[in-house]
Image 1 (cartoon, rainbow, N blue to C red):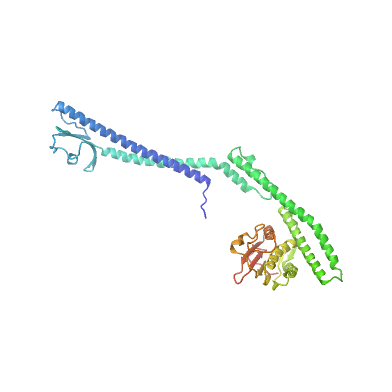
Image 2: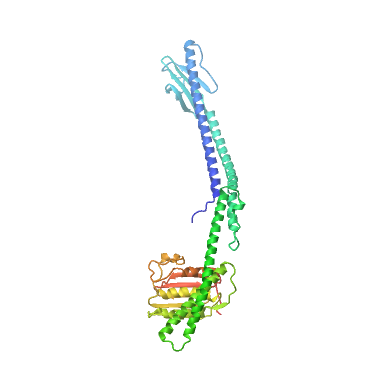
Length: 432
């Protein structure tokens, strides 16, 4: 699971990192610059003092060595440096940093043919001041980091306020109400442009959805009249007593197809009306009886294949929904099981609160199971005719009425297991 990083947190983090790095760079630059300037000034001063003293000593041999509280000077002849502390005796001409007896010194050495001159400067106090400067600068870095954090939080809140407002308004939108529009609540800036783009996208989606609903409603409504004519004409023909058996069988197939088409158009009309919030009340339907009728309708489609169709229902299961909706839902599932089972059996088990459909067909590859409800999806190895819309309609009907449906391959043998739960929120149901 990827860690959720909020944009506001990213802005705040950027401010803190930038402020801290800037403070650290400033502090390091100050310390290094101070040390470099101090070292250069001391070295130059000591060298100048020593050179000046040796020049004056050559002019007046009676002049004494310079003495300061932190500066000591020594002048001697070459090879006679006993008066010079041991830590400085062997140093060549130049300016050196020396540690001696726990103290730090800067030593300027000048070794000429006639005189050796030494000037030492105790810089221990300077180093203590440098340490204190480091401590002060670290404290300043911490303070500036906290100030950067406070500034980052304030700036991120100001920057993200319009975006958060847009997200809040999107969350508060209700699907069953008209889209109010978002751009009117924001100025003409980047967030306002995003809100306007969302408004345009929402209007286009709404137009597409309305056209889809209108098309489904119009087609379903217009198909009902010719289907009623077909059903009526078929009933009149079947009422004749002297029909040949083959003709009667074909008329029965026409009647079943007309009934199935009528159920489908009725279910689509219910689906459209329910999505528009205008679905009417429905009565309780006996699932076992509907399953028996559907299985009897599919028996002639076996066409001599060694397939058994069975319906078992030890308890009575009633579901409040239009009969056409239940018939289309179960009919698609049973029809698929019959269509793809070459031999064996198809069993419809009506139980308390649910219906299980088992077949002995080839099953569905595991990698294709998540896609079976996609519109126009058909497996790679699936033969026969089909548009790939049946299971998509089944899923929409189940979502509309709060049912759940599961597909899985049978573990005990080849085939598919389909389980549809009509009361998924109830853990236990007492049989009627």
